[in-house]
Length: 214
Image (cartoon, rainbow, N blue to C red; front, side, top):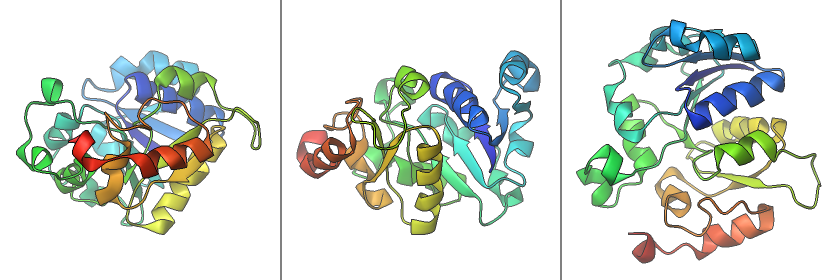
């Protein structure tokens, strides 16, 4: 697949490495420009490009930046993307970093807020896993200690694409429901950072309680 990644921090950089190693055609961009990504590009074979160009002609675009920065991306950025491009949000809402966002404080799922900022539907994924685990814990299908990655979204076809990427990196994908249910995998819930297998991940998602999360 042709994959664009916006952000090259712990999760973004790891996704560049893992997806390129899995044989995907990866491009990466950040707010500092392609020159700042030269070493990552040389290491992985990914293309360093601009934020404006990284969304063009892609099957998947992963937005992996601080949540508040979603509102600071160029306006209309995704108008140049194919309507079929799957957009993935890896972000988490941390008020101490992002400032108080009233819509989220009032109960909106953080990825729903991100989708509103981008003007595109998103699939929430890779927000519960540590970068070290993403880098090192991929295992063959059926392995007894294989970790799971939960995802949430409203489009089953888009989720299927993300499930395939998760499989390509050596993890089991677990469906956590609609985007409005993605609070079940946000900070403070049982699945967040827990490094669980598929069955335990399903249980943790089911056991999440909104009143405790809030």
